[in-house]
Image 1 (cartoon, helix red, strand yellow):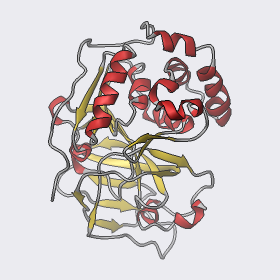
Image 2 (cartoon, rainbow, N blue to C red; image 1 turned 45 degrees about the horizontal axis):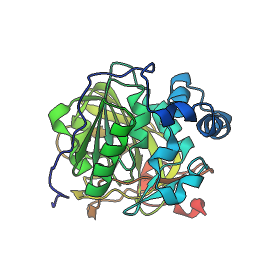
Image 3 (cartoon, helix red, strand yellow; image 1 turned 30 degrees about the horizontal axis):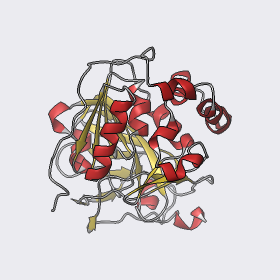
Length: 312
């Protein structure tokens, strides 16, 4: 098994906590009454996200500050945007959906895999005590650190490295969010999640449409349930697939935190198949766009790419 770039660490470590009442940069204050507020109303609230804390955080983070100058005029559109190095900043609705599903508490510690532009970390920083975020692309990690510092967000710590291995130095974490797709959830991430903690990640064929799953760790295992179909760009780095198995249990994934991950999914169709063995590339990436039509197959079918035809 090969690893991605070395474990160089770039840290933004000044304050120990942040609250919704923190004063932010001038651009943040100006955006609250303008395009960001309109974006939240039309693209997030209108689509059913009603978590007041999440909505307020999205209003307070100036999205335009997290996109390249050449696409800044599109910063508030309901779509993902390129940020260089083959990565994107997720569309506003997807950021809101994943943040809401994460259910972050004010005193909690969050690990994000896939820093990208830093926008998701910025939103989370207004909801949690500490954010630890890992980005595999050195240029993106450095740019995100500078951008987050300029925004006055001092409870965010940025590391350049392979996100498959998490950030063990500061674990375990109350919440983990992965913003890129892989065929399985990396074992190290499950191990770094506290008992009762929540993990959000897109699972499935990285080249097709995946299933966003929400998992809760109980008894050392991650019980993850499908939320909805989304399309994410693939993770990068390197990790070997663990075995998958089909069991006549409930409609949920069970990922063991000990040894190689074992997947257990209750199938709804007799022909459900699981892909075994091989290698997958895994690390960081950003959401491309959410897919609006529901998928009839379960999460293992997504891992086999069965829902790709529905993406259009």
